Structures are given as C-alpha cells and as structure tokens.
Image 1: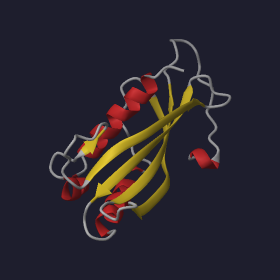
Image 2 (image 1 turned 45 degrees about the vertical axis):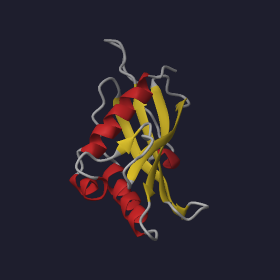
Image 3 (image 1 turned 180 degrees about the vertical axis):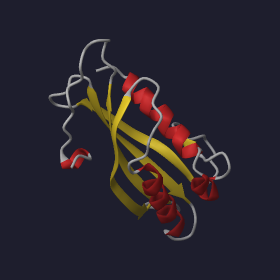
Length: 155
C-alpha cells in the first residue's frame, strides 16, 4: 500500500479545515492547524497527531485511514476545547474532501473526547476521523463495489 493516499487525504483535510469560516472564529483567520506544532504556538490550535492506514479487506484499491486531530486550548476550563472539537465534528463528518489522486468513499467522525492535561494547564479535544478512499483503476477495468461495515461509515 502506497503512502500517496495518506498525503492526498492530509492535503485535502487541511485545505478543507482552513476554508471553514466557523473554525476561523476559534483558530484565527489562517486557521491554526499543524502537522508539526511550532516551538511557541499561539493557542488554541489543532494538530494532526496520528495517522493510520490499512487496506480495506476484499477491495484491492481501497484504503482506510484513521486520522487523529487534537485541539489544544489554554483557556480556563473545557469550554474552548469542547467548542473546537464540536465544530471539527460538524465540518468533518461526511465532508466532501477534494482529493487529487483518490476517489473519496467515506468520511466519518468515529470518536470525540475532551479532557485536561495532567498539569491542568491545557485542555485537549481529541477527534478521530475515518476516511476511506479508492485508487483510480486503469482504463477499461471496472471497480469492485466497496462494502463498508457500519463501523467504517457504511449502512
């Protein structure tokens, strides 16, 4: 399995989030979302913290990716992290990501959690996103129908 689906999805995901006016309210006009957090970040921000990928069983061209996003807040209490995590859920669940090299099958938010750091200085809003994509097939080959289980966003 090539890493290209991961790059394609990450690029589309960041572009999608940066285009959301509702996130600009919380994360600034440039929407502070990072693949690598700068040494002295402005709070709040969102970081891509983990990306997992695996082939979808029975579908040679499909890849399932699980992307973990972490909203980080230094606001007193959980309100800001919870609001950002909730807005991420709204703008990402079933989002129409514009992929360059893949066909988008499904985008689902599978998990959301808000919690404080051990030192109580930061509050985190953790969101897990499941994205299933298919690679384009060579000309003249018909694609197999990808059947998603309910856990992967299927019916």
